Image (cartoon, rainbow, N blue to C red; front, side, top):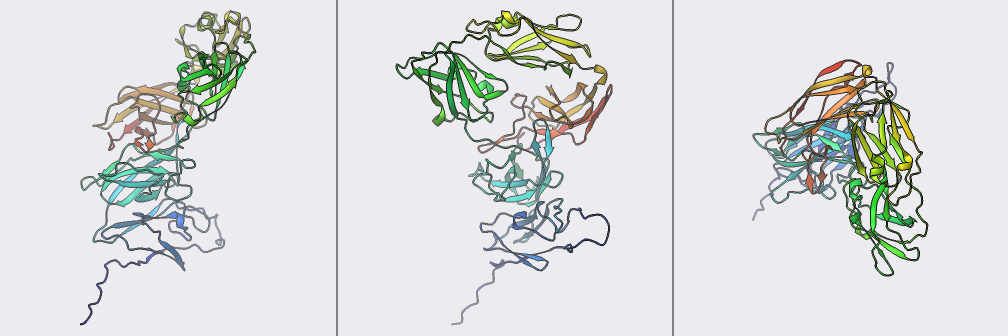
Length: 553
């Protein structure tokens, strides 16, 4: 019997993919300036700068043969699949010029190429405002009916590319389906998110590519370093017989620690409760928290338990590190409250008209004694009206009804000896405490106007607009618009500005960046593409922002 020969595989188990590159010759050119032009094709590529999608289970073998790089798969490629090979912007030529944008090409193991595309931009969050992020990895992960979540700490993406030198990216030749996207500063290039070292960004929702919608634009990201470590209580000790200091290993959310019900103190000897009268911190430091208590017994040891607190990333307190033992103190509290901080600072000039006055005390005073003796007075000895409020037990804030006069010296005044703390100790503040500042000259100010447009079928939400200066990254202005339409920033210092905005769905006036797993989306945002120039006594007009419809709206 004659044996039939084996059928040839349409796709052999070993496929050689050869990429040709134009190589720069070593040595200096005969004349002209130094070569700093980003390469269009490369002379040298490392394995870490090449991405093959869909990601094979076994990595390709890389081998140079002269001016050719040969990639050899270690297993058969999947049938009827489009494979995308991307050379990332980390690749360099012999003069270490980075590739200006990712270079991508595709091939198919079937009869046609997939042609879905997703594009957008990547930004990174600064103290105020945003800036473009180059060389960031963009991961696209296919979802299915039985796979609604993706954990980037454990699962590798199906498609990968990188942002170019303008912070833009395009994922090409994607198969149809539903995708979840992540932007990651993949430092070690292992395609796994390391939350301790690598920033990550989410989009405003998943993307579904279909025959009717094969392309999606404006899928933008904002990178942020995620903190997943829960805060821990590391120490506690009595400063006097009525005051306890708690030390944590990181900053806490201020509102999460101001509730005295979150702290329980009992005597180790007889389990009698020591009452907590007030909780406060020294603004802006929330790593140290102070508890004002009823009088301790110096002969007793106490156990403190923190029932609830969150860090600034929203992580709840580590329950394995939320208790502390301390010895009672016999030192009496005989010192009254002092002023720890005043804003605006004494002698400050060019203070904006909408500035609020903040007094930070080193301990909680009797609030009524402060309110009765506080005054804000201008150079004409006119008392300025306004509203006072307590942001925390030791932080008093006064919002003037108006500071309308330019170059006016304003004086903050307190009759210190009439202020007492909660234990009736008289204040250590001078009998007449004063601090002064000078308001802006309105002739130096400009303004910015424009309009905000939102595409149809988008969920309505208030819009927060932010104008931030490039030279002073802490100088910014914010507006809240209840609906699309015109806007006006008044009384803006001259300079160069960027502008952006976001849809504030949860109405907390803070841009929510989302979470990777379980997934929560980024709030939709937009950045004006051009620099805005503000001049004195001049209105910069025609600034238009448009929010684009996305898959989760």
